[in-house]
Length: 127
Image (cartoon, rainbow, N blue to C red; front, side, top):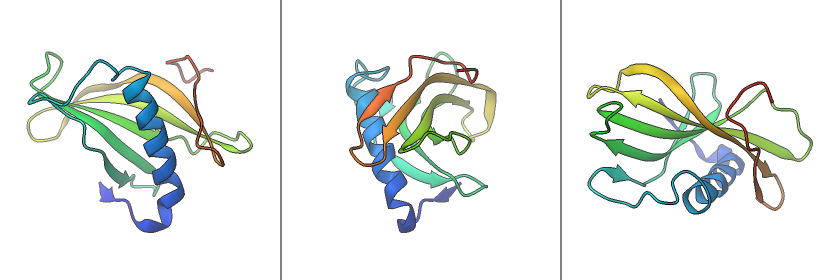
């Protein structure tokens, strides 16, 4: 994982908008900062150079030692004036190794100009 560099500021703003939406309106609305949940955002680039953010990290989950909530830029989306982000949960062991397949939690569109977020109301790639 490579920390996100400044030329990706457009993506960073969009990731922050989508994360804010998920934290206030979505799946993380009821989860508060605690010993078990770290809500600090961290920005990264994938091996292909696409941006993503870890928007919450849970420890000692029933599902895995660590559960990372990630927002990942969907480079395949071709909507005019919008970017699409996939919200997924990653299940990791204490060493950061993935222990099971990521779970898709949702898809979100972010308006490139206004940063308005739209929940696409799906958890499937076939939408």
